[in-house]
Length: 219
Image 1 (cartoon, rainbow, N blue to C red):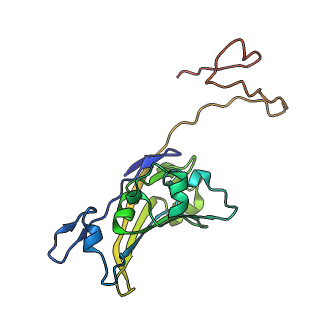
Image 2: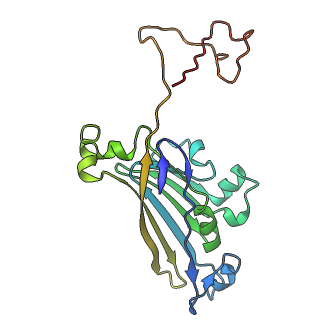
Image 3: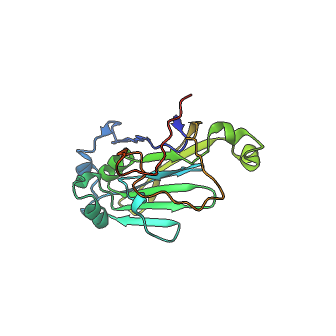
């Protein structure tokens, strides 16, 4: 898998369940196939781990206001934030977790909810982080010796009708992070000048952008 540094890319991860005869269980028939004797649905949990990046789902991470390293959303909150989202794509729980060594997203719900959710997860490598830098002992002395590569780890497990946890998927995907050039930045470190809010590249009106300078670099 390839990704650009500091750029969102769709993971489009999928997993498949099969019945006792080896036939795939579709999301449309999963409700009946995975219903327990007491009428409850089997619950599935999917977790994806990244060592040099972060995840996003439905724009939930971008609006997280938690001061801790963990953000959790219940289905009721997701419905309020994304009212147009189909119910079959809303998991019961979404977790964003930031640990010392890795970033993780977790989704929990029925098979259909989890299946639809993980196909919509986006991944973004860290800024100024790419496969060349990870291997370079001068830029990343620790990473080059311990983990000079990006690895996405997908784990999926279910809680069956007897409340026992069963591991369904445990796979790793290596990611080649392609480096990109940063846009040039020109500034005077000793200046205290702050450009007006009207100085934006989206509004090049000479009448309202007096005193603003715009540069167009070509190479």
